[in-house]
Image 1 (cartoon, helix red, strand yellow):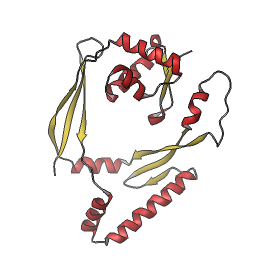
Image 2: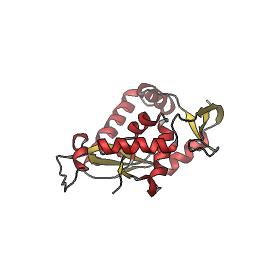
Image 3: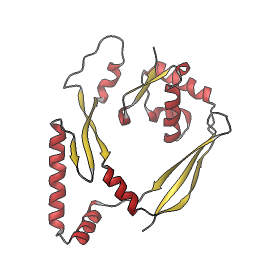
Image 4: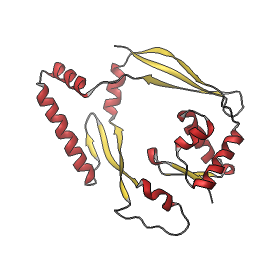
Length: 207
């Protein structure tokens, strides 16, 4: 079955007349049961055996990551636990003064995954792409200067800002907001800096 790709354009966020384009695959959901059925058909193994193996892998993967291992599964990838400060402790972390975090304030907040190169290559070999359409993110109602000022005012009041906060403040899509924040962090004149990575990334005012 062909896979569809979508071209997305972010139009003129900074008044330069230029657009940025990127491509993503139009994905469909496959349930756990459907995946098990597919494996059973291809391998001839009973579904109960496949379910048992997948369950065992999930349990032992969690245990190994919890013990501090980066687990490499050939043909799939490497899995590692990601740590972060508990949500109810984030505000205190950015208040003036020294803060010491311990096992009671730090928790597992996600799982890092790096795909095995063989998995990427195999996916590429089996993938046949067809065009699925285009979407355009229109010019926002606020100028770049207005968006920066809104972010500064928010940070002056709340100390930290999440990506979702910037989306609500500016009306940008999450993709456009993420790209713009990356540019602001790289521009010292914006006064905005970043802390953390991935889903735990926060923005705050620089010193």
